[in-house]
Length: 482
Image (cartoon, rainbow, N blue to C red; front, side):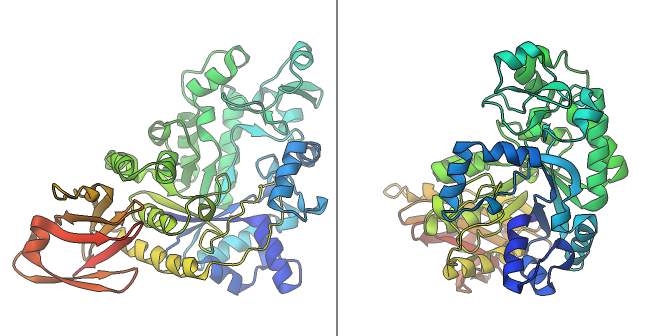
């Protein structure tokens, strides 16, 4: 099961440069810093934002008052030198020279591989920077407009490389001012996308595709209408993915996906898609909503990415205070599918710096939270082996708090584990019949991997009426069953 750790590359290297009092690039990161990245239980590192950022996009950002205000809010002592431009306004898919260039990335990949870690990089399929070479060299890859479009909607179109192009957008928001829209229906773009992804696959073990659903035929047609023309017979990703896999059969493909299109994108070739629905339920809903979500088919669930934060979402410590974050973390860490952790999450960082910035504010580490994650991540790696099963929890007529308990088991060839989470702000009690018939007729010891506490129980009682659980608000068990 894939467990990813996202790092804001520019911020990370800048902080390492400060720590070691010298410029640090991807090619000369100290070994002890790579050791810190190699979190036990993590098997892939996503170096977010390694490609050449756009000077033209940066100039646009520096004129945007609302953006500048968000920068100051995150970093009150902001200077212009802290604003690097957006990593999703890509001028070229070449590793930025300031980060060490392609040679530095190759060295970083080797250092990660030596620690058993795969490297994941970004791809932005929907748009490029206004100074990307394709505007001059491959205009048929982009959505173009007219003089009338530019005069009527200057916020939606721009003139560049002697042409008028549409600014990038999705169907629900205003255009993004710093990017130019690619044409998902263009044969030229589809071929260029294959070439680009193959090139990224030459340099990495996986690709995280930004806003992947925007390129799907039906979504793109809804967004662009007559500007896009009639949809091709074949959808975008079913054209692209097999051609990329022909060159890189083991390349991990991860889709940032929303609007309940995860299953469709899995069917179109992605290994994993963001589980934004679970994220929203953990933040805003209750245990019943989470349990309902987990009743989906296992094929679907194995293709999801569970997360509590990333560079697009607020920090978990700011949105899930106290023990609620711990309960949510146990949940996402021990479910089938991939897991995504975000650098700074384990230490309880609360400020989410905009991706335009190369520096973030200093924040004190939450040592208790760090210790919790230090136990959870390796424990989850041990737990998620074999067959996963969502388990029923029963209660009593005068006590319905069992509804707040979530429970599932993992049954592997040499190990059995039980996870129980009280996803509520009050104590909860319930009974959980365990799914292992061979427990009958003998005593058994359950060991909590998060606390090392042990519980000796009769095997027959564990089967019926089940393990009795009494958990405080937002507390969990991650139990190994001997």
